Image 1 (spheres, rainbow, N blue to C red):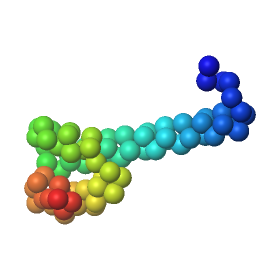
Image 2: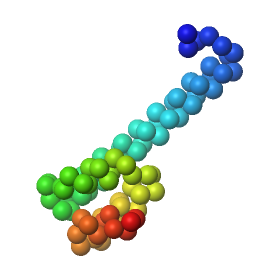
Image 3: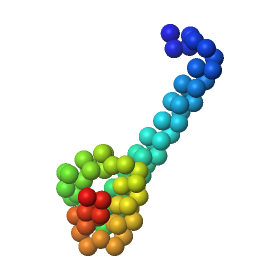
Length: 83
């Protein structure tokens, strides 16, 4: 049972779980905002590869792409910055 074990281990596991959940939620939020920016900038028909790139992106990738979307001439230019 998950609640069995030393109290310190249980507290650590709970804290770690909350931290991972928050991090995952933050990344999902960044992806959602970036996708909205891409749609507003390049139109509603984003290529299928965009979702794949967003899903596999690191936090650093998402930050670079969010900055790039403002000045990029094409959707490819947004993502070329991290290749």
